[in-house]
Length: 135
Length: 329
Image (cartoon, rainbow over all chains, first blue to last red; front, side, top):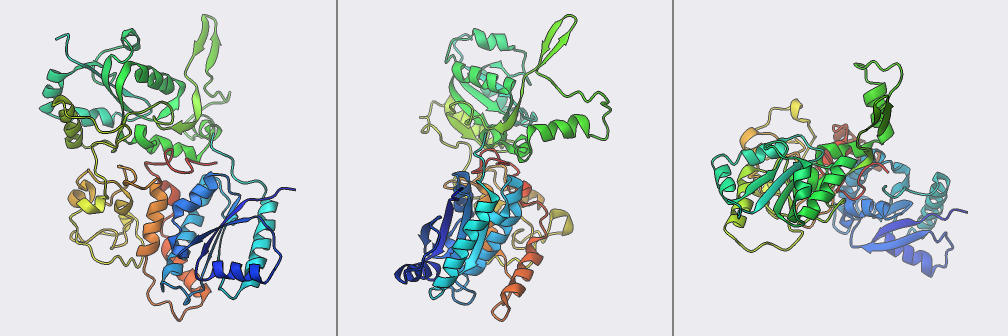
């Protein structure tokens, strides 16, 4: 069975703490995500997302705080706008925007994190192996 | 006369604007002629490929190579000129990062041939003939150079010593580079981007800048801008924040036109389009959204960003083959 590789960028304050909670709570979920911790979801430069795809990621997940919860007040709003613009651009590069997902997951939402990872992994498994390396 | 160092300039997939930028040195072109012998430049002087082949390896002091690598012929000339040159300079945006010819990387070779030779409304081709590298005729076999699947930059094809950005490079910057060679100044480290700055076009732009709070985006034909104010703040998608300086910001300063990004990404940035998205994400201002639901925020963002119909084409106008993804995968 095809095992997708998913690069997950988690904000330190919310989603990463949520993943910590999932771990300490011994929740089981699919192991396809490789987590990179950032100080804020808005720290994730669109270059990081493109680089992940270029280096063979089958999917990219960004996890940040819910609106109103951002440690830096407006970081998650900036992330949302960037993600939406990137999604408009990805089809020109032959990348299905469904491979790129943004979720707001708080430090208390370990259950949501587990659900998102499982669902996203299956979704990408159905899409098949990622992006052909440039000729 | 025989002691003058030899230089060359070659065009691969390019428009000829780079040669014009050299000719635009005006009176200084005489100084170039006094210091160097231009032995090969198909656009400006008579000289054949066999003349270059007859040179010793490294006999050319400098080759200014403009144009992207689109065909076998472009590639062959890149390898030949690399071998014959001490210093190979990727001159202009096409050789440096792919530029306009590089936009074709959003489509396949098959798409291009179909659009150009089969579906084009102004063409009549009932036998559906597309170019072949070899064609048999009674007199023998005719050959033309193969058309590559993708456009490549010069550095993706051969080893390059320096990069001189711009579409075309500004002549005063070209002169700075040539003059420093004439005066025998020490060469910068290999791989340096020469004839340009390190910061962004905004740095050289004289328009009045305040906090960027963009309420809506405009395409250039939709608005008459205020001449004094930053164009991006007025909602015109100006690539200044994601573009290298060196050009004296001539488009915004002199013509009230937004920067379209021809000097490529500034120092420390690999992907110009991605960086511009990062800048826009910060600069867009949706007003007070604290009372709105997630759906309402989404609708408001969509309302603003849908004004640009083709993000990829706009943000990678000059830099597609040299960008992180390089084109359609």
